[in-house]
Length: 372
Image (cartoon, rainbow, N blue to C red):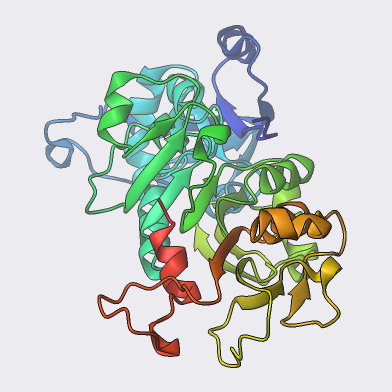
């Protein structure tokens, strides 16, 4: 699916070198940034034990944006909605500056150009944000998630099931290692038909593409989880059009929010109980309706709906019996889950098949049974 995410960066390095490496990847260079600090004092970042060789001296860290010196606080504000990352064109500079910037409280938005091209090509990349996502899913009791864009494996963070619930994905092509992370990988959305998930995960899109994604996945879940960076078109869209949804909750994260969106949904479950006479069925569970089959040939009306409205074959009931009601359901209903039973034969999960209204299969029971 198309999306519309364009990373906004502060570039530390030569623009010509970076743009040549970026090739056709669209990147918004917000500004050019440079530093002086511990490397100029001859200190190097030693991965084995940096504490033995490094002592941060705040006054020695100087930051220059487009040639003008700025403070650490000013840089933090820029990284909170104006720029997504500080991107180092050379990994050596990234290593040399990481200590000073980490000690200054700037941790999650420092990446090399290789990381930008690999992990952040399609979405905002932050290790901390994926930890927050796991908390959001648990907090909303989301136990079955469809990663519509196979976005989780864009990162190098292959979380164990202890962090994430059962996650399936949609991906036209994938690497074998991805199968270790996802429960099931569907080649297309069409393969997900007749499945139902607790939630769908969508990467950031333009509002137009976000609406298209909602439409394309409408039958798969009533809940959408997405991330929107600060000061982006998607963030503004969700704020302005919040009333279009039943509920939107936002959880703060690095450079934006995780949104849990609950769609407004009509009653999407109905079992039609077929009868041709007054069956005296006054008490039925929610989601059940009595349909009068063969109403075109009848002088009386029984039930909630009749099979001779809209596109119908009610006149053929003498030959087809309940099939005229089934045809009417096919041509005239729009519920996501539709069932049919005879007025003397109801669905149940009880082993005791003696009739009782409380034994009739409920809407919640039927929905759970049909999840797979």
